[in-house]
Image (cartoon, rainbow, N blue to C red; front, side, top):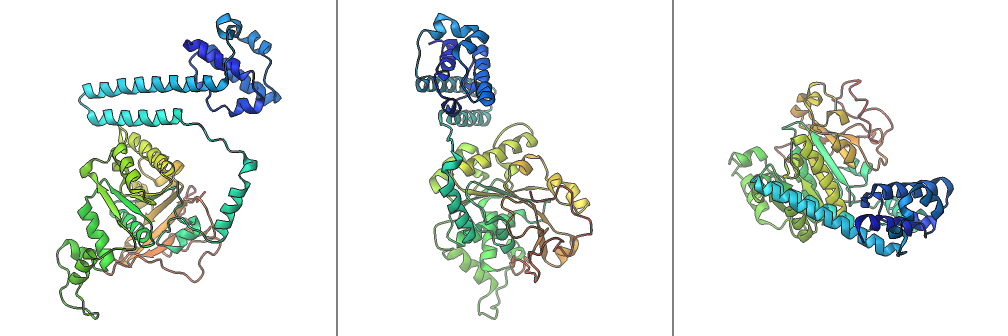
Length: 441
């Protein structure tokens, strides 16, 4: 069956179905190539929307003469067969175009770009070959009740180390992406490690991805926290050798932490940029390790996408959402705030650097802020910019945590009037500093 015949065969098959079955067919006009057939397909859907009925064949034939042609109406075929053939045709076209583009990149001496083209082609093909899962809202009642009961009972996703964030979000649920954004030097990397370590100690499988720092640099931070020793002394090789009140020196605590089993299970695992962190390599790693949490430091440096950093971060964020859903895992990642956040002391969606995609696509978005006064007091503020499940903590415009690099104390600063409606709990916030866009919706 030729291209046009297949398209009109599809249109013809739709006219034999009930309205509900037409709307449930899981290919659409994007699978068609004949302009007339695309118009007929759109007309059928519009007619069903407006009248609740499938248009009569004569009505469609009057508008689209090709439907009357012997070739188009010669054989009445089952819609299931036509749908399979449309999928095959589109798959062939995607593979053909993808391989052609990949060869072009290889001729241009760009093997990395060729691999990215192939990766995108594979994802596009998967989307075409997989059937769309249609949900009848009247049939998912038991699942909704179970979800409500889980929430009511306090069930969490992968928990944050800070109680207020858990109260807002119910933790990092599978298939969600959480971003922490901050200015350089604020502590994004430590936040990733703190979250990863907390998840691991609570029996979650954790994979850390570090496109910026190598595994040794990340390990120094992790084990400084684990041993409770000053990070500055670790990286300067000046940990104390004199025994403390517990009879153990700082150096011994650090070495013991490195040599001891961490938490109840294997890991946490880390991959760094020595292995060129492309999407196919990372997906293969995730499939092999099956983590509950994927923690990505400096996500904007992943080798995903091409073009400017702005263009790449769009693909990176989309890829993180894709990975979260494909592998049913939670993702926590870091990005940057603009200079405006530092100059004006305002954090919000308008101050996320590089792209608006993070604002749109992240399920949870938190901004990290540390003024000179807070740095002096060893404090850090976490501002909820966008929260997926705005539970009991609505109105809490910031969560203050200890940020003590000497004692490795990153606990939340508890407040007596916690979760009180309205107002700011940030003692360092200037009156009127909350941005209009800084609402956690």
